[in-house]
Length: 336
Image 1 (cartoon, helix red, strand yellow):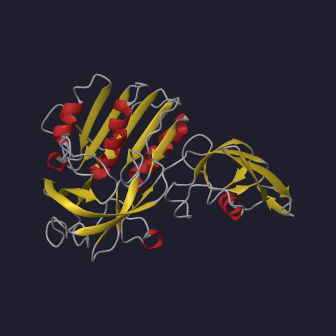
Image 2 (cartoon, one colour):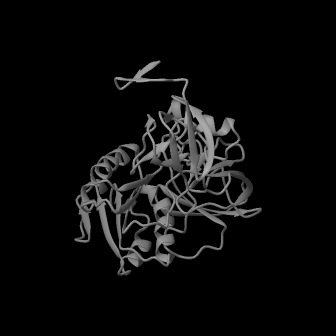
Image 3 (cartoon, helix red, strand yellow):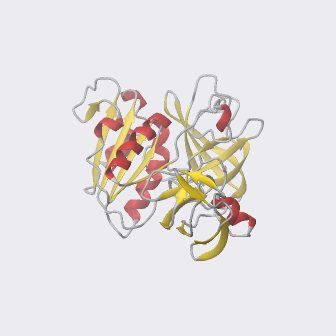
């Protein structure tokens, strides 16, 4: 016997679990993902430390311990433990693939943001908003979100990346210098849980800072193509006007009647259409029926998560992590 939150729990008890209707068993206190995989149940996963979001699941019925995620009833199955019979649901995602590619174009969109166009040897399936690992030959792997050109134009390349060039970055600084057109690389993925979902949410709130615009742009365009039209609030933040590398695309998007666009910078703006502050300062009043997608620093995501949790809305976010973070060096999304 063990005590959990003051209650006596029989750790030897078997529980019946279903994940998307497929049944399996687990003992009290066992990690849900471990139980599923040991019994041959297909359950999406990657990092297994509760960071990538690939194993996110919704608890329809039952009680779990730990592994809580932002959003109504959401858990990380790689961290959550079963305390009762459980009914879970998770989204089906494209399988992780490995694809060879080469650099097809390099375009500076700002002094510190370079757009990388890639040609692939074969198609890579991913959902709008997911990210992949990109290993340029001779360099360590880094993770970025496939997206569209920052100026809103159509691309003839198979994939487009928005990369912020970071001082002393081993990969980002090499782009345009040691990594030129024709450079070969390997792509693995997709990963992540912040992909566009067509569900019952009434409004989309999309929030991005810096090159977090890349996955948010993918989600936005998928939503605009969806037959279930929803109002969209798009909040974009940058350090200053020069950092708004996506200004041309924002100008086009601002003409769409279903989009309410809010642009904010850390420096006092010179134009009335740009506000002074951080994206978190200009979130609309959130409702339980909102779907909030966010891409940016962990600090920004944490602040948004608190507001989303208080409102009872759903949050979809894969936070950026610096390449130098020792405990999370498997995930270096949109960094050096």
